[in-house]
Length: 122
Image 1: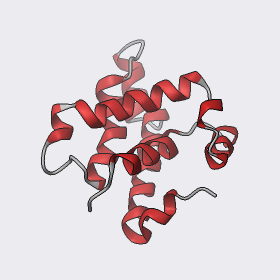
Image 2 (image 1 turned 180 degrees about the vertical axis):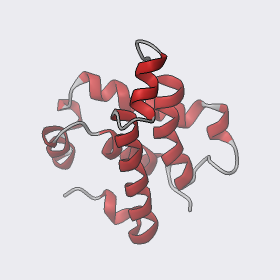
Image 3 (image 1 turned 135 degrees about the vertical axis):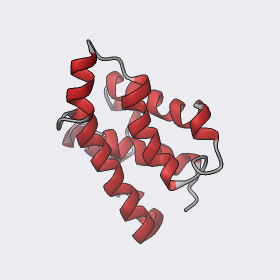
């Protein structure tokens, strides 16, 4: 399923959203008021989606799979961890990466079933 760059960014924002306050700001369209940490994480994941070699393949670029892969790829290839144990904990053993990846999967599934309307926050 095809998606635009803006839809990819919105899916990333929703998947990586850390709390209700940030979600409320996104719903209001007040993206300039979200935390710098959140902005940086979203920017890093979106940059990965737009620039990584694996994200430029026909099977990923501009696809819903690519949007999902941007979130999982961010945690596996971009995010810094204090050590390999922390990385394993986050990605495989129920940590933040696993939870955010599951959220991305759920959002992409909803997008596939219900379309772009799931990105409308108002």
